[in-house]
Length: 409
Image (tube, rainbow, N blue to C red):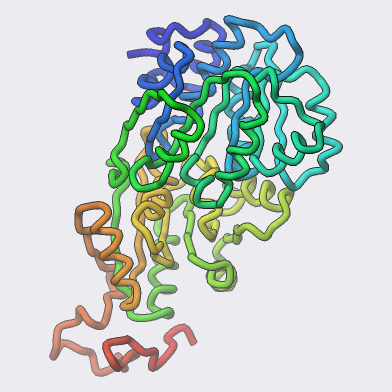
Protein backbone atom coordinates (compact mmCIF):
# COMPACT_ATOMS: atom_id res chain seq x y z
CA UNK A 1 0.00 0.00 0.00
CA UNK A 2 1.11 3.57 -0.71
CA UNK A 3 -0.17 6.88 0.66
CA UNK A 4 -1.90 7.39 -2.66
CA UNK A 5 -4.10 4.37 -1.87
CA UNK A 6 -5.44 6.25 1.17
CA UNK A 7 -7.04 8.89 -1.10
CA UNK A 8 -5.10 11.78 0.39
CA UNK A 9 -4.96 15.19 -1.29
CA UNK A 10 -2.15 15.82 -3.74
CA UNK A 11 -0.67 18.52 -1.53
CA UNK A 12 -0.48 16.09 1.38
CA UNK A 13 1.14 13.51 -0.87
CA UNK A 14 3.65 16.14 -1.98
CA UNK A 15 4.49 16.97 1.65
CA UNK A 16 4.94 13.28 2.47
CA UNK A 17 7.21 12.81 -0.53
CA UNK A 18 9.28 15.85 0.46
CA UNK A 19 9.72 14.37 3.93
CA UNK A 20 10.80 11.06 2.42
CA UNK A 21 7.74 9.06 3.50
CA UNK A 22 6.75 6.59 0.80
CA UNK A 23 4.80 3.81 2.50
CA UNK A 24 2.30 4.21 5.34
CA UNK A 25 3.06 2.33 8.53
CA UNK A 26 0.68 -0.29 9.90
CA UNK A 27 -1.00 2.16 12.30
CA UNK A 28 -1.43 4.70 9.49
CA UNK A 29 -2.93 2.12 7.14
CA UNK A 30 -5.39 0.99 9.82
CA UNK A 31 -6.50 4.33 11.27
CA UNK A 32 -6.47 6.92 8.47
CA UNK A 33 -9.45 5.41 6.56
CA UNK A 34 -11.42 4.97 9.79
CA UNK A 35 -10.86 8.56 10.92
CA UNK A 36 -11.75 9.84 7.45
CA UNK A 37 -15.07 7.99 7.81
CA UNK A 38 -15.69 10.09 10.94
CA UNK A 39 -15.71 7.05 13.20
CA UNK A 40 -14.50 7.09 16.80
CA UNK A 41 -11.18 5.32 17.24
CA UNK A 42 -9.24 3.74 20.10
CA UNK A 43 -5.81 2.89 18.73
CA UNK A 44 -2.89 1.18 20.40
CA UNK A 45 0.50 1.32 18.74
CA UNK A 46 4.05 1.15 20.01
CA UNK A 47 6.21 4.26 20.22
CA UNK A 48 7.92 5.12 16.95
CA UNK A 49 5.32 3.56 14.64
CA UNK A 50 4.16 6.83 13.08
CA UNK A 51 1.00 7.35 15.10
CA UNK A 52 1.26 11.16 15.06
CA UNK A 53 0.91 11.25 11.27
CA UNK A 54 -1.84 8.63 11.63
CA UNK A 55 -4.15 11.26 13.10
CA UNK A 56 -2.63 14.46 11.66
CA UNK A 57 -3.07 13.37 8.03
CA UNK A 58 -6.83 12.64 8.27
CA UNK A 59 -7.40 15.86 10.26
CA UNK A 60 -5.73 17.85 7.49
CA UNK A 61 -7.67 15.95 4.85
CA UNK A 62 -10.95 16.75 6.59
CA UNK A 63 -10.07 20.46 6.58
CA UNK A 64 -9.18 20.26 2.89
CA UNK A 65 -12.48 18.55 2.08
CA UNK A 66 -14.52 20.91 4.27
CA UNK A 67 -12.67 24.24 4.69
CA UNK A 68 -13.28 26.01 7.98
CA UNK A 69 -15.67 28.93 7.46
CA UNK A 70 -16.43 29.80 11.08
CA UNK A 71 -13.01 30.99 12.24
CA UNK A 72 -13.31 28.76 15.32
CA UNK A 73 -11.16 25.67 15.74
CA UNK A 74 -12.54 22.49 14.19
CA UNK A 75 -10.03 20.06 15.67
CA UNK A 76 -8.42 19.71 19.09
CA UNK A 77 -5.33 17.60 19.80
CA UNK A 78 -4.62 16.93 23.46
CA UNK A 79 -1.14 15.93 24.62
CA UNK A 80 0.05 15.08 28.15
CA UNK A 81 3.19 17.25 28.02
CA UNK A 82 4.34 20.52 26.49
CA UNK A 83 7.14 18.71 24.68
CA UNK A 84 4.74 16.36 22.93
CA UNK A 85 2.43 19.26 22.04
CA UNK A 86 5.30 21.05 20.30
CA UNK A 87 6.36 17.85 18.52
CA UNK A 88 2.80 17.41 17.22
CA UNK A 89 2.77 21.03 16.07
CA UNK A 90 6.06 20.35 14.26
CA UNK A 91 4.48 17.42 12.39
CA UNK A 92 1.36 19.45 11.53
CA UNK A 93 3.51 22.30 10.21
CA UNK A 94 5.48 20.07 7.86
CA UNK A 95 2.54 18.01 6.62
CA UNK A 96 0.39 21.10 6.01
CA UNK A 97 3.07 23.01 4.10
CA UNK A 98 1.40 25.00 1.32
CA UNK A 99 -2.08 24.63 2.82
CA UNK A 100 -4.14 27.47 4.24
CA UNK A 101 -4.52 25.73 7.61
CA UNK A 102 -3.65 27.48 10.87
CA UNK A 103 -2.81 26.02 14.27
CA UNK A 104 -2.52 27.36 17.80
CA UNK A 105 -0.57 25.72 20.63
CA UNK A 106 -1.87 26.18 24.18
CA UNK A 107 0.27 24.80 27.01
CA UNK A 108 1.60 25.73 30.42
CA UNK A 109 4.92 27.50 30.70
CA UNK A 110 3.80 30.49 28.64
CA UNK A 111 1.72 33.57 29.33
CA UNK A 112 -2.02 32.76 29.00
CA UNK A 113 -2.64 36.30 27.72
CA UNK A 114 -0.15 35.82 24.92
CA UNK A 115 -1.69 32.50 23.96
CA UNK A 116 -5.19 33.95 23.81
CA UNK A 117 -3.99 36.18 20.97
CA UNK A 118 -3.66 33.06 18.81
CA UNK A 119 -7.08 31.83 19.91
CA UNK A 120 -8.78 35.08 18.94
CA UNK A 121 -7.36 34.86 15.43
CA UNK A 122 -8.77 32.34 12.97
CA UNK A 123 -7.58 28.92 13.99
CA UNK A 124 -8.32 25.49 12.50
CA UNK A 125 -6.46 23.18 14.89
CA UNK A 126 -5.70 23.69 18.59
CA UNK A 127 -2.88 21.64 20.10
CA UNK A 128 -2.53 21.77 23.86
CA UNK A 129 -2.28 20.25 27.30
CA UNK A 130 -5.45 19.58 29.32
CA UNK A 131 -4.71 21.77 32.36
CA UNK A 132 -4.05 25.03 30.52
CA UNK A 133 -6.95 24.47 28.10
CA UNK A 134 -9.36 23.78 30.97
CA UNK A 135 -8.27 27.00 32.71
CA UNK A 136 -8.95 29.04 29.58
CA UNK A 137 -12.34 27.42 29.07
CA UNK A 138 -13.25 28.03 32.74
CA UNK A 139 -12.25 31.67 32.36
CA UNK A 140 -14.45 31.86 29.24
CA UNK A 141 -11.47 32.87 27.15
CA UNK A 142 -11.61 29.76 24.97
CA UNK A 143 -14.71 28.52 23.14
CA UNK A 144 -14.64 24.91 21.97
CA UNK A 145 -18.26 24.75 20.82
CA UNK A 146 -17.40 24.34 17.12
CA UNK A 147 -15.07 21.39 17.57
CA UNK A 148 -15.79 18.46 15.28
CA UNK A 149 -12.84 16.17 16.11
CA UNK A 150 -10.88 15.60 19.32
CA UNK A 151 -7.65 13.59 19.35
CA UNK A 152 -6.17 12.45 22.65
CA UNK A 153 -2.57 11.41 22.16
CA UNK A 154 -0.73 9.21 24.67
CA UNK A 155 -3.94 8.60 26.60
CA UNK A 156 -2.21 6.08 28.88
CA UNK A 157 0.42 8.66 29.78
CA UNK A 158 -2.32 11.18 30.60
CA UNK A 159 -3.87 8.70 33.02
CA UNK A 160 -0.49 7.99 34.60
CA UNK A 161 -0.05 11.73 35.16
CA UNK A 162 -3.50 12.10 36.71
CA UNK A 163 -4.87 14.21 33.86
CA UNK A 164 -7.96 12.07 33.26
CA UNK A 165 -10.37 14.27 35.28
CA UNK A 166 -9.15 17.44 33.51
CA UNK A 167 -9.70 15.83 30.11
CA UNK A 168 -13.22 14.71 31.00
CA UNK A 169 -14.08 18.13 32.44
CA UNK A 170 -12.70 19.87 29.37
CA UNK A 171 -14.59 17.71 26.88
CA UNK A 172 -17.80 17.98 28.92
CA UNK A 173 -17.93 21.65 27.91
CA UNK A 174 -18.41 20.69 24.25
CA UNK A 175 -22.14 20.62 23.69
CA UNK A 176 -22.11 19.22 20.16
CA UNK A 177 -21.31 15.64 19.20
CA UNK A 178 -17.67 15.30 18.20
CA UNK A 179 -15.50 12.57 16.74
CA UNK A 180 -13.11 11.17 19.36
CA UNK A 181 -9.79 9.51 18.56
CA UNK A 182 -7.71 8.10 21.41
CA UNK A 183 -4.14 6.97 20.78
CA UNK A 184 -2.06 5.07 23.27
CA UNK A 185 1.25 3.24 23.32
CA UNK A 186 -0.52 0.37 25.07
CA UNK A 187 -4.13 -0.60 25.64
CA UNK A 188 -3.65 -3.62 27.89
CA UNK A 189 -3.80 -2.94 31.61
CA UNK A 190 -3.60 0.83 31.22
CA UNK A 191 -7.21 1.73 31.96
CA UNK A 192 -7.49 3.47 28.59
CA UNK A 193 -10.47 1.33 27.60
CA UNK A 194 -12.36 2.46 30.71
CA UNK A 195 -11.34 6.05 30.00
CA UNK A 196 -12.62 5.69 26.43
CA UNK A 197 -15.98 4.36 27.62
CA UNK A 198 -16.56 7.61 29.53
CA UNK A 199 -16.08 9.58 26.31
CA UNK A 200 -17.61 7.40 23.61
CA UNK A 201 -20.08 4.52 23.46
CA UNK A 202 -19.20 2.91 20.14
CA UNK A 203 -15.57 2.81 19.13
CA UNK A 204 -13.40 1.12 16.54
CA UNK A 205 -10.56 -0.57 18.45
CA UNK A 206 -7.27 -0.88 16.56
CA UNK A 207 -4.35 -2.69 18.19
CA UNK A 208 -1.26 -2.84 16.02
CA UNK A 209 1.28 -4.07 18.53
CA UNK A 210 0.56 -6.15 21.59
CA UNK A 211 1.47 -4.50 24.86
CA UNK A 212 4.53 -6.69 25.40
CA UNK A 213 5.97 -6.33 21.93
CA UNK A 214 9.04 -4.32 21.13
CA UNK A 215 10.59 -3.19 17.91
CA UNK A 216 12.41 -5.93 16.02
CA UNK A 217 14.78 -3.22 14.85
CA UNK A 218 16.12 -2.74 18.38
CA UNK A 219 18.91 -5.02 19.64
CA UNK A 220 18.64 -5.49 23.41
CA UNK A 221 21.72 -6.29 25.48
CA UNK A 222 22.20 -6.65 29.23
CA UNK A 223 25.48 -6.14 31.06
CA UNK A 224 25.91 -7.18 34.69
CA UNK A 225 27.68 -4.64 36.88
CA UNK A 226 29.36 -5.29 40.22
CA UNK A 227 28.68 -1.81 41.61
CA UNK A 228 28.51 1.87 40.77
CA UNK A 229 32.14 2.16 39.69
CA UNK A 230 31.79 -0.85 37.42
CA UNK A 231 28.53 0.46 35.98
CA UNK A 232 30.14 3.82 35.22
CA UNK A 233 33.05 2.10 33.46
CA UNK A 234 30.59 0.09 31.33
CA UNK A 235 28.64 3.25 30.50
CA UNK A 236 31.76 5.07 29.34
CA UNK A 237 32.90 2.08 27.27
CA UNK A 238 29.54 1.82 25.47
CA UNK A 239 29.23 5.55 24.81
CA UNK A 240 32.75 5.86 23.41
CA UNK A 241 32.34 3.01 20.92
CA UNK A 242 32.27 4.14 17.29
CA UNK A 243 28.75 2.80 16.65
CA UNK A 244 27.32 4.96 19.45
CA UNK A 245 26.61 8.25 17.70
CA UNK A 246 23.89 9.51 20.06
CA UNK A 247 22.79 8.08 23.38
CA UNK A 248 19.75 8.60 25.59
CA UNK A 249 20.62 7.46 29.12
CA UNK A 250 17.74 6.86 31.53
CA UNK A 251 17.85 7.27 35.30
CA UNK A 252 14.94 6.80 37.69
CA UNK A 253 15.58 9.95 39.75
CA UNK A 254 16.80 13.42 38.87
CA UNK A 255 19.52 13.23 41.54
CA UNK A 256 20.95 10.18 39.82
CA UNK A 257 20.62 11.86 36.42
CA UNK A 258 22.62 14.84 37.69
CA UNK A 259 25.26 12.52 39.16
CA UNK A 260 25.65 10.56 35.92
CA UNK A 261 25.80 13.72 33.81
CA UNK A 262 28.48 15.28 36.03
CA UNK A 263 30.51 12.07 35.90
CA UNK A 264 30.35 11.92 32.10
CA UNK A 265 31.29 15.56 31.76
CA UNK A 266 34.26 15.00 34.08
CA UNK A 267 35.42 12.37 31.55
CA UNK A 268 35.20 14.91 28.71
CA UNK A 269 32.06 13.29 27.28
CA UNK A 270 29.54 15.68 25.75
CA UNK A 271 26.48 15.21 27.99
CA UNK A 272 23.51 17.15 29.35
CA UNK A 273 20.73 16.36 31.80
CA UNK A 274 16.96 16.56 31.23
CA UNK A 275 14.10 16.26 33.70
CA UNK A 276 10.85 17.94 34.53
CA UNK A 277 12.07 20.81 36.73
CA UNK A 278 13.65 22.81 33.92
CA UNK A 279 11.82 25.78 32.44
CA UNK A 280 10.22 25.27 29.07
CA UNK A 281 12.76 27.41 27.20
CA UNK A 282 15.64 25.46 28.75
CA UNK A 283 14.07 22.11 27.88
CA UNK A 284 13.51 23.15 24.29
CA UNK A 285 17.11 24.36 24.01
CA UNK A 286 18.44 21.07 25.40
CA UNK A 287 16.26 19.11 22.99
CA UNK A 288 17.46 21.20 20.06
CA UNK A 289 21.14 20.69 20.94
CA UNK A 290 20.65 16.94 21.25
CA UNK A 291 18.65 16.69 18.04
CA UNK A 292 21.27 18.68 16.11
CA UNK A 293 24.15 16.58 17.44
CA UNK A 294 25.72 19.42 19.42
CA UNK A 295 25.39 17.22 22.51
CA UNK A 296 26.06 13.48 22.16
CA UNK A 297 24.48 12.16 25.36
CA UNK A 298 21.22 13.14 27.04
CA UNK A 299 20.78 11.80 30.57
CA UNK A 300 17.11 11.89 31.44
CA UNK A 301 14.36 10.76 33.71
CA UNK A 302 11.20 9.36 32.16
CA UNK A 303 10.04 12.85 31.13
CA UNK A 304 11.95 12.08 27.91
CA UNK A 305 10.60 8.56 27.52
CA UNK A 306 7.52 9.89 25.81
CA UNK A 307 6.58 13.04 24.03
CA UNK A 308 10.04 13.98 22.83
CA UNK A 309 10.27 13.04 19.18
CA UNK A 310 14.01 12.44 19.07
CA UNK A 311 15.00 10.63 15.90
CA UNK A 312 18.34 9.09 14.98
CA UNK A 313 19.17 7.91 18.51
CA UNK A 314 21.63 5.05 18.11
CA UNK A 315 21.60 3.87 21.74
CA UNK A 316 19.15 3.88 24.63
CA UNK A 317 20.93 2.99 27.86
CA UNK A 318 19.06 2.09 31.02
CA UNK A 319 21.55 3.18 33.66
CA UNK A 320 18.71 2.50 36.09
CA UNK A 321 16.26 -0.23 35.14
CA UNK A 322 12.64 0.93 35.22
CA UNK A 323 10.29 -0.68 37.69
CA UNK A 324 7.72 -1.78 35.08
CA UNK A 325 7.85 -3.58 31.77
CA UNK A 326 5.69 -1.08 29.89
CA UNK A 327 8.00 1.77 30.91
CA UNK A 328 10.92 -0.29 29.62
CA UNK A 329 9.20 -0.64 26.24
CA UNK A 330 8.55 3.10 26.06
CA UNK A 331 12.18 3.83 26.84
CA UNK A 332 13.73 1.53 24.26
CA UNK A 333 11.18 2.76 21.72
CA UNK A 334 13.23 5.97 21.51
CA UNK A 335 15.67 4.12 19.23
CA UNK A 336 15.07 1.98 16.13
CA UNK A 337 12.49 4.43 14.79
CA UNK A 338 11.39 5.06 11.20
CA UNK A 339 12.83 1.79 9.84
CA UNK A 340 16.22 2.48 11.42
CA UNK A 341 18.07 0.06 13.67
CA UNK A 342 18.99 0.80 17.26
CA UNK A 343 20.54 -0.65 20.40
CA UNK A 344 19.07 -0.82 23.89
CA UNK A 345 21.52 -1.42 26.74
CA UNK A 346 20.64 -2.45 30.30
CA UNK A 347 23.19 -1.98 33.08
CA UNK A 348 22.15 -4.32 35.88
CA UNK A 349 23.56 -4.36 39.39
CA UNK A 350 22.73 -7.09 41.86
CA UNK A 351 19.86 -5.09 43.40
CA UNK A 352 18.35 -4.54 39.93
CA UNK A 353 17.79 -8.20 39.17
CA UNK A 354 14.20 -8.22 40.42
CA UNK A 355 13.41 -5.39 38.02
CA UNK A 356 15.09 -7.33 35.21
CA UNK A 357 12.97 -10.39 35.99
CA UNK A 358 9.83 -8.24 35.96
CA UNK A 359 10.74 -6.78 32.56
CA UNK A 360 11.54 -10.21 31.11
CA UNK A 361 8.21 -11.52 32.39
CA UNK A 362 6.46 -8.63 30.66
CA UNK A 363 8.36 -9.31 27.42
CA UNK A 364 7.83 -13.07 27.77
CA UNK A 365 11.48 -13.62 26.90
CA UNK A 366 14.90 -13.47 28.52
CA UNK A 367 17.15 -10.59 27.55
CA UNK A 368 20.58 -11.70 26.30
CA UNK A 369 23.58 -11.17 28.57
CA UNK A 370 26.86 -9.88 27.21
CA UNK A 371 30.26 -8.71 28.49
CA UNK A 372 32.68 -5.95 27.65
CA UNK A 373 36.24 -7.24 27.34
CA UNK A 374 38.23 -6.11 30.32
CA UNK A 375 35.09 -5.13 32.24
CA UNK A 376 33.66 -8.56 32.98
CA UNK A 377 31.79 -8.82 36.29
CA UNK A 378 33.82 -10.39 39.07
CA UNK A 379 31.16 -13.06 39.58
CA UNK A 380 31.86 -14.39 36.07
CA UNK A 381 35.61 -14.83 36.50
CA UNK A 382 36.73 -18.42 36.80
CA UNK A 383 38.27 -19.50 40.07
CA UNK A 384 42.01 -19.95 39.98
CA UNK A 385 42.41 -17.56 37.02
CA UNK A 386 42.69 -14.37 39.03
CA UNK A 387 45.71 -12.21 38.26
CA UNK A 388 47.71 -11.46 41.38
CA UNK A 389 48.03 -7.87 40.27
CA UNK A 390 44.26 -7.49 40.33
CA UNK A 391 43.22 -6.70 43.86
CA UNK A 392 39.63 -7.70 44.54
CA UNK A 393 37.47 -4.63 44.33
CA UNK A 394 34.30 -5.99 45.85
CA UNK A 395 33.31 -8.43 48.56
CA UNK A 396 30.06 -10.30 49.02
CA UNK A 397 28.07 -9.62 52.15
CA UNK A 398 24.51 -10.77 52.81
CA UNK A 399 23.99 -11.46 49.10
CA UNK A 400 24.86 -7.90 48.12
CA UNK A 401 27.98 -6.58 46.43
CA UNK A 402 29.85 -3.99 48.41
CA UNK A 403 32.43 -1.59 47.12
CA UNK A 404 35.88 -2.34 48.51
CA UNK A 405 37.86 -0.06 46.28
CA UNK A 406 36.74 2.63 43.85
CA UNK A 407 38.74 1.89 40.76
CA UNK A 408 38.08 5.35 39.38
CA UNK A 409 40.35 6.98 41.97
